[in-house]
Image (cartoon, helix red, strand yellow):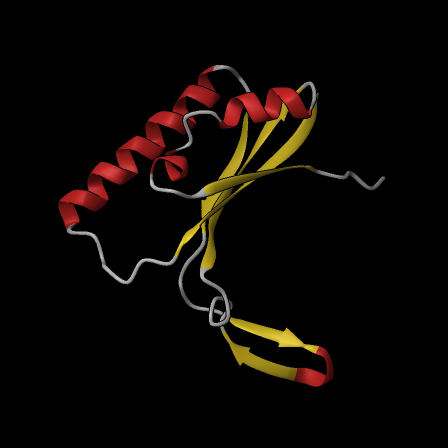
Length: 112
């Protein structure tokens, strides 16, 4: 089996969810990831925080990383699948899709 990374993208939201809404969102994510884990295809996952800087050539450091874009990367999951088509099938039901986001599915290159 190969490893694939699903990168979750969504529009930036200016509204902070209520604690109850956040708890409900976390449960939906846990259920979706749990379904992948139950199939023995889960490797790792993390969400990304809102703080960050972008380091560019000549040591130019800018605020970001989302200052210039309307879409942000919110997190990722790494899964095991036989091929790209199976990895795409695993992305079905991803919570980010329910609120207009997208899932980028990429193979993970292993260097020996």
